[in-house]
Length: 93
Image (tube, rainbow, N blue to C red):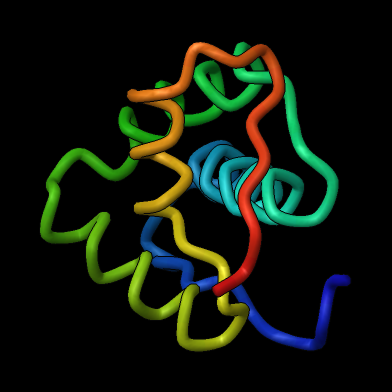
């Protein structure tokens, strides 16, 4: 259920970079809300990492996003690395 919250974005990013980051946050929401194909999450995360290169910046965005949405970019990234399932799905804790 998408609530009224804002994605943590850096407005120094280009329009294309903003779209890439938003697509990743959308993927995180989908993993929690209905499940999402692993290959889609992989592609979006790989693109996301071309914009957000540092672990520190990724952690900062994750904290901000999780504080507003209860969805964790980190947990989705961990599931992506460890799961052999075709559909990734997480429950909000």
